[in-house]
Amino acid sequence: EEFEFEPEPLTADLYGCSITSIIRDVRKLFIGEGRLGLRCAKVGVTVGVLWLTIAMQIFLMVEFRRMVTKSSVHKIREMYSEYELWMYDRNTETTSNGFHRGIPGHFQIERFSDVPDNIDKEFICSIPFSQPYFFICILMVWTFTVVIDLREIFFYAELLLVRTDTVASVQEILEEREDHIVVLRGLTFPFKVLLTLLIFLPRLAIDLILLWLGCRWLTSTASFGDVLLNAIALEFVLLLKDLIYNATVPKRNQWETSTMLIPHKRKSQASWGSYLGGFCWGLAVCAWVFVYVYKLQQVLPDYRWDIHEVCETYIDQ
Figure 1: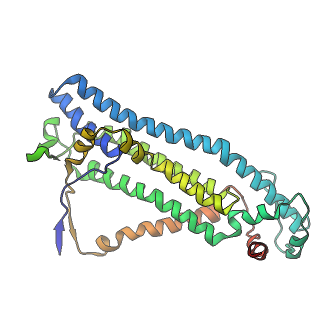
Figure 2: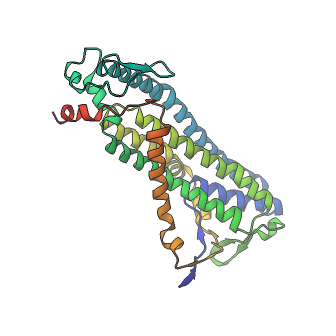
Figure 3: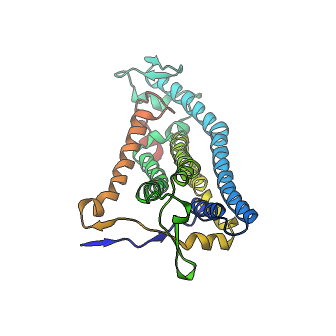
């Protein structure tokens, strides 16, 4: 069984609106159609709002790191170091950043009931690593949230930069149909470069940085309630593009986005890839989370996985 996907519009968000404006308005500027000042203002404001949104996302990430993540990481490292020193009866080694880690074979679980005042039991048992399965699930939810955006980036980058024909002139870019519908026929090479530099690369960088900082922030959150709230806050930053699009973009611009159709330029056959290929993203998410938790995370370097057992009874109480 084989069928061809129907042409469809870009996603209704700031990125889709900006791509539409770059293609439709810059094309009209080159061929001298419409009012020059209006077209320049429209594409300038549309792309400008997108970049202001990107700047806001970067600012929020930097401030999260400066005001929240940095202090949280320092506190969790200090408390875990004191915990290691006590639970291993000072049989520890020092990490590269000066914190204690217990030497295997010297852990004394019974010492947890008599921890000194400088070790906060509740704080220790609220470290995300104390409940690794719950914490891994939270990281997976956050990673899946970012993957939604990553899939969209790769899909449209392939569609517009690879599968869309490279044409010789701007006159060949669009085909006008009835009811004000326009269909993308091709893109010139400069247009593809412009979309890569202004749209796809910045969006990819934002998503990857958000993924990393989000995982780091969640890892350093010593409260299970706050872990959930922080995951929601991270999603808010990721979805700013939708929020600002719906709040500020004029209906005319939204309509133009919805009436520019992009052909898929491929046929789909019943195959392993067409039916099951998308599930590979799930495998990628699982791989990323496990590699991050066990290899890449730097909130607690050389973590000994020695909190879960002693905290089980404490949490149940």
